[in-house]
Length: 212
Image (cartoon, rainbow, N blue to C red; front, top):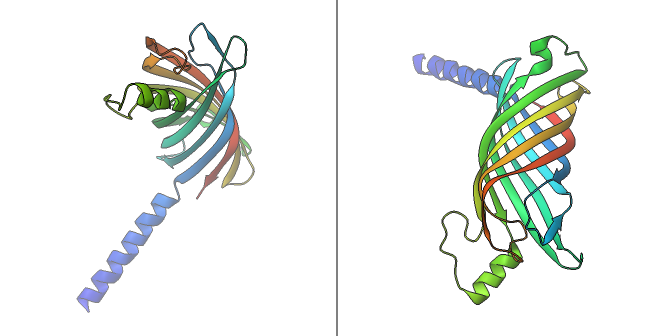
């Protein structure tokens, strides 16, 4: 009998704990554009596609933490605009989130504004450069993702929200991403000159946020 009571108590406690965790979880999915990036003088770079998804956990009504994964496309062109040099950037970040509208007292039932900031890892893959390198030189010996330009990223952004229901919101997100220790130009297959420094890009996107 004691074992049955203990089992029931444990099951109820674990269920309550699991429910309290899931009730504070939310999911973001945004689609938009990538602006910026560092190319050599021989190429130009327009805007690209940006896709981002994240999972957040609300510590309380004002603060949260979240992890996200983002993708940026790059399409550099030569001066004549005939040769394309395509790259893909992949970012994973851990961020803190502050509910600015509630903290400052201007939030409403339908509108909210959040600030998010954090750091993570960013890697840029240039397929043309990697194929040419393997053909003419051989296998890569660099650390990290072989043949990629790997770096640390720092991200800061604002996230206005329009709440459709208590669970579902429409998002806009404006984020600045700083790329520490970027080593190569984005048009790497055309110009593989080492270019160490601080890169940057800007993401503007819209999407949805769903809270469990």
